[in-house]
Length: 362
Image (cartoon, rainbow, N blue to C red; front, side, top):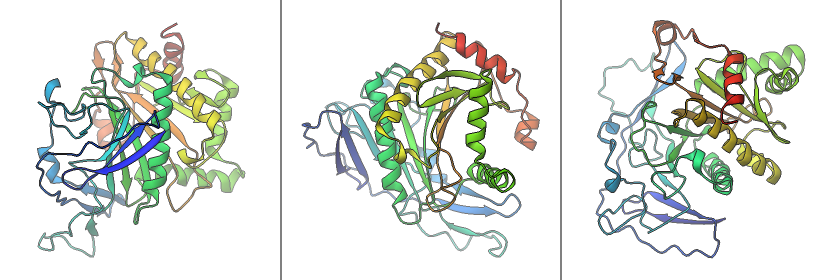
């Protein structure tokens, strides 16, 4: 795959990833765009010991434009978009409305916050958009296996590049799919957040893994995978290098984890066979999700990767895919127990969810 970096009219980076290595990219961005200024800041919650990002400038981001004004489609004379080429395979670019930016401005010192109690700092990281196809109406589940493999290679390449940037502590590629999830653009795309801290969920997961290793001398994630493969009850589908299963304490109405059979910290470590097998397996999983209620299922899919600078021996790369769709005509909304106390209540058992998914699309 050929990688061609370029600059957009406001100085943001855009990268073409072309499956045909003979492709030449020489389409300049001719739009008149103002220089990007990002005012995001991160504040540390001293009670929960978590960082929270404040990004008030994102209130003005584009929301559900008509198809002929989609900013992720290829550029036409009537619609100059974020992608100045007339066609493309996979494209990555810096978000125009980022939560995190390496150029984030310094925090406003006049804000009345006790600096000894609440630490504040510019939210310096990077937010990228990954556009999977130029076809506006095609979902990820409808991509050919070859394109899924290309997207995986792009995720791995971006993980390496972003992890090498100054101040980055964790790289998180993810996709939000469906208006029920809250997407603001329907064109098939995902995002990558490069955080300046290790996220709360990853911190908790690694804390559990560390305790387990100290007590049992083994890797917690590998033990979970081995148990699911042995018991079979919650396995949805598997191949030589990957297993997709519903976790035994699933929180969401639909919740599937995809694990490689070999422990590794992040996407950059996947070999060629593992990449090929992931593309095959993920297409099957996504098509089962769409077949579950005979409609395109809304979901969030996110890669759990090791932090850049710590616990790389503890972490275990895996993908989590979950949906708020709890029935064909019903969504799950977080109620008081989930939102207020983080105690989850699922309306279906993981075993029931796995059985439904195994049968879907057969």
